[in-house]
Image 1 (tube, rainbow, N blue to C red):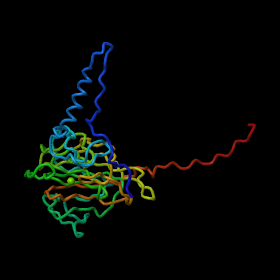
Image 2 (cartoon, rainbow, N blue to C red; image 1 turned 90 degrees about the vertical axis):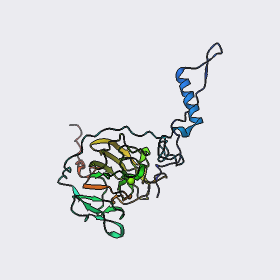
Image 3 (cartoon, rainbow, N blue to C red; image 1 turned 180 degrees about the vertical axis):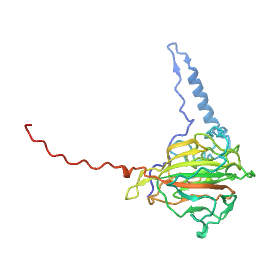
Image 4 (cartoon, protein in one colour; image 1 turned 120 degrees about the vertical axis):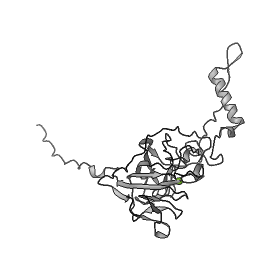
Length: 311
Ligand code: MG
């Protein structure tokens, strides 16, 4: 069943209806400066919407409920924040983490035709056009840590430069991209919820430098009949900087199309994308979460004997 979060409706930003001119008691047309400004911007929007497009992206894709087109060329790109130097050592995995990759082997993954075939290079795994990887283990609500590095030798531009991705349930993507001085559409840059929501800021390090993702994912909830009860939600720290906080996802990741939900099991694999660029990953671990705190339910109150009347 398909959920209902996504719709094709919505108003585009910048398409304000022109305000009505105001007349004073003398019959003279008087316009406040703010009204003039609004009128001018409305005229500019009507005359030259394409002139707002500042870079890569699309002007012909569907409009999301948030008012932006999918991969909207006019959507503002997040400001850049220098996250500081890369960690010299991988972040240690906590004791209760499921370690998916520690530099030694790809045993935790499947790949095209069943076998994970990414290259093992200098303690990292590197995508090499042999297909996406998927974790053998399945996860629902979880905390993920992983480290990635875009190719040190810069090649390509926009979506063709250091592209990969982390897909919860194999379908909800947190984008991996070399977004260091590499303009692309806002909802496609590093740490974007691809095709939906840009990160709050661009915290990308230089190509070849190690970057961290710390992700908290709450899986979508579905009713028995497949109807969507709650969307997926994700919190993302990129290089230690908060770029999404409990952000609802609009559905499964799509390219040039509206995201939507289709019911699935309570747990699923995590996928790493092979987009054709040699992106490296290391130190990939997951902690399963009990976000519903099912282990912390108070016992039902004991029944109290009724008080004797007249006491
Ligand atoms: Mg990607």
